[in-house]
Amino acid sequence: MTSKLNLISWNVNGIRAIVKKDFVSQVKILDPDILCLQETKAQKEEVRAALSLLPEYRTYVNSSKARKGYSGTAILVKSEPGEVYYDIQVAKHDQEGRVITIEYPEFYFVTVYVPNSGRGLVRLDYRKTWDKAFRRYLRNLDSKKPVIACGDFNVAHQSIDLANPKPNYDKTAGYTQVEIDGFTKLLKDGFFDTFRFFNPETTGAYSYWSYMFNARENNTGWRIDYFLCSNRLQDQVIESCIYAGYAGSDHCPVGIKLAL
Image (cartoon, rainbow, N blue to C red; front, top):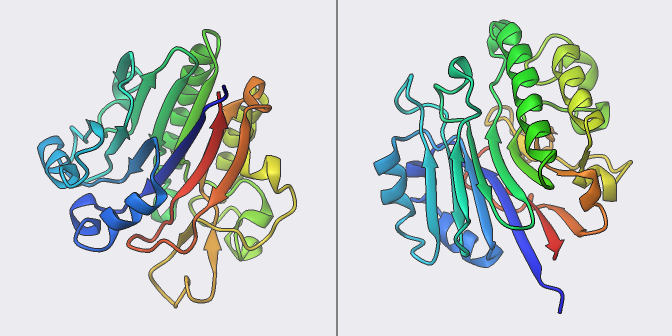
């Protein structure tokens, strides 16, 4: 009998803040088998305390070593994984709690909070080296078994992935040619963007909206949160969703359903 996994990713923009809103009730409605969080902005014990409101999940946390209250990721699972790995084993990229990998017999599952290139693109050069190292990390995993990688990739890959492409191109973090090229190379290395696989030409589908200028109300957004899967999983990914109605962060959850 085929089983179905419900997989969700959400940049929460501060776990301690979002749990004071409707986060827990929304997670219960989504009912993911695996829930990945980015930008938790808290130390490990603080994240675990906040997520104790979801006792049905086993929780794995990676927090920034370089700066408290910055970056950070977490994975919540109903079914205990075989192994859990933190970071990508490259010292200069492993200071900000950006990656967690869990392993099941059928696949590796990775959550990532990719570095933002920053105002004035001050971290764009760093971002380029990060993208290369992360791509190498995923490629190595993929050589062993299929990979599902989700999270905030901090890039709108195509012009249809943001509301205002022309004024932002090569000026705004998340839509520079360097970032676009890094994402393209990742796809060419054997991965596919699950949302575009099902919705190749859909416009107006975004996962992030600035808190300024009524961006969410006007749907002036960006699609920067993704589920990428190894190409050999194409027949098993049966649905890809953007849950734009879920509030509490400047991002909304995204998800896929996977048939095993």
